[in-house]
Length: 114
Length: 112
Image 1 (cartoon, rainbow over the protein chains, first blue to last red):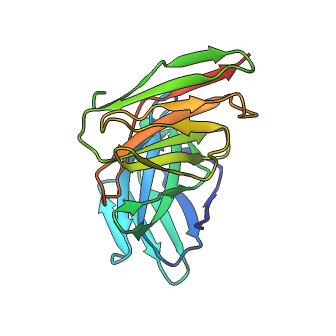
Image 2: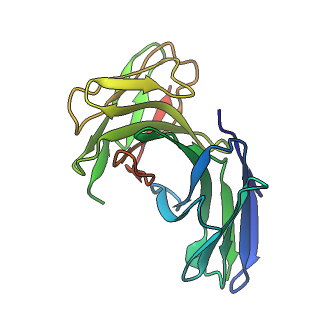
C-alpha cells in the first residue's frame, strides 16, 4: 500500500518568513495530493491540492509543487502570519474506480512567531 | 460548521464497554470514512463506505465495527476488543470519485 512520509514534524518561523513542508510517497499510482490544515481543537480542512498532471499550483500565499519522478511534493507558505499556526497534513491518493483511498502523512506542527 | 456532524464531542467509557460514535452528513455524499488521530501519527483509516449497506476495512479496523443503513449516517462502534481506544476520532465524507474529504468536528474518546 501507499506510504507517505512528512518532514519536519515541527517547524518554527518568524512572522513574514516562508515555511516549507516536504512529503514523499511510495505508490507511483498516486495521482492526487491534498494538503489539510488543522487548527488546534478543530477539524482538518483542505487548503490546496494538486493532481499528477500539474507540477505546481498556487493560491495566494500558498503553493504546492510536485515531482512525480522523485515521488515528492511540497507545501510552500510565504509571508507567514500567526493565523498560519496549525498542524498541516499532506496526503496521497491513487484512483481506484470510484473510490480514492487517502493516505495521510504524520503531520507538521507549524508555529509562526510574531 | 454544518454539513457533517459528530456526537458526542467528548466521551468517557469504562474498560470492557462498547461505545458508539455518531456521524451524520447532509451533503449528499456517497462516501464516508472513519479515522483515528493519535499524536504524531497522523490520520489512520479505520473503515470506509462507498454506498449504503456496504463498507470496507481500513488500515486499523481491528476492534471496531460500523454500519451504513442510511446514506446520511455512518456510526462507529468501538468494542471492548480494541486494546487502546483512547484517541480522537474523525468522520469524513466525500463525493464519489472526488478527492476532497470533508471532516466532522471529531469525538475525543477516553477510556477510564
